[in-house]
Length: 383
Ligand code: ZN
Image (cartoon, rainbow, N blue to C red; front, top):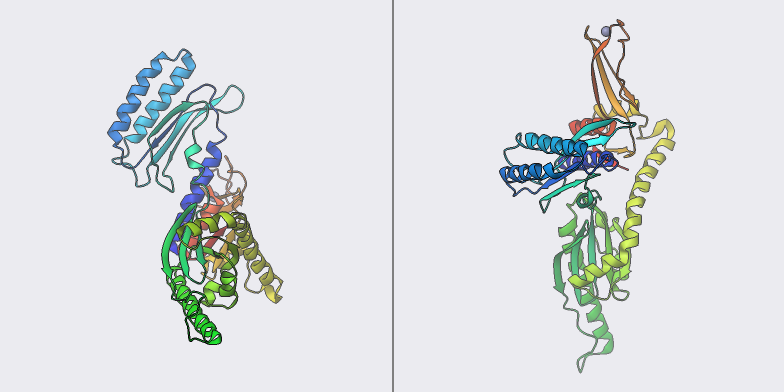
């Protein structure tokens, strides 16, 4: 679970940085973006940049040339701090961006992406090049997939956009033509028995595949005809997994292709499911709040922080759009004060001794909460 929190956090931090980066503009074609995959040597990147630097001597505008060369130099010196490229690769954005009026300011972002970068990219443009990252910013939650009829079943998982087959197997259910000498009634009974055994086998395999997965958002079941609905309605699945079944969908096939078909047919519902899950979490909170004494709920920043620190929090809901800072001030006499604000103050006097505040520490409020949650092992849901 601790890992989940840190992965969510890396994604959040990355997303936050991207929100800033996407709006930055250069005054000319002078913003540099560099994507370095993990297998690339730093020295190769440096010689590539050195070459770009000499190419930039041809730039006609003096201002643009100066800014491009400044950005390339800045990236090269930053790269010196890396011996090797990190596991998922490295992204650098650097340049002079417009900062209101005639002003510009130099920005440099060094990011380790939450997923692997596949290709080396160098771009010089009037904005930073972020196209390869849009897919990474999407949430990567998984859904369990089952396609089945009475003769075949496949179990798979949907992660991001990828459908992975986990298991495929056939049943021993006899085809619908009976052998001579068998009564029709007895044959029917045999079929039902064999089908029952097959459904149990599917449920057992589904349990093995999904029961231990924390990231499973829901299970969708598909296949031709009514068998899938019967399977769900009769409660063959482990009760924990049964709760996660969101719906059934038609799919013409029960093999790996059927899994993909299922995902296509369920696409609209999958999107709604993400929204629904958030709604459920919020409703759970509201129903606790309505209980006498507030039930098992806590809300409001100060109260939440208090119970969080005490280790009493199971799940913490945090609004992703929360654009606030947690600020810690300390004066020369060692007085400290901590509070939440929308904007980091630039200058302040100490409340206790009126001397100027010496040190201002400011972090994103969501990051601050992530840190607290990590320390005590609470689950955190960004919504
Ligand atoms: Zn003071």
